[in-house]
Amino acid sequence: DNNLCAGFNASFCEAAVTLRCYSDWESLSKAVETANILQEPAVFTLCENSVLEIPTFSPIRLNIPDITIQCGSNGNSENKCIIEGGTTQLQVSKDRAKLQGITMTKSSVAAVHVI
Image (cartoon, rainbow, N blue to C red; front, side, top):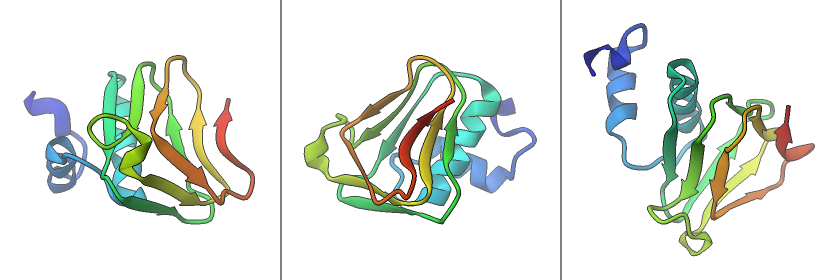
């Protein structure tokens, strides 16, 4: 769809649409923000053997139903995807959000906050 990137930084949006996996918090955060705006189900794959470090307070908000964040192409914890740090890592406000195979560690308040 040619309108998929309307209103966004075109080079970032095109990269987010074609990116196969995420290995840093900022890229994942921006891609999820775009999906929240579009209000469509989405799957976000973290790169295997990656550690996504979170700045002090910058949780990702999962505001759409049927959203998945998974470790590697199969969502297996053996793929070693780690989300580390931050105050709260994910804020979930809709049903059917799935986290598959991700290790969440070192958050100072909560790994997942349901709002």
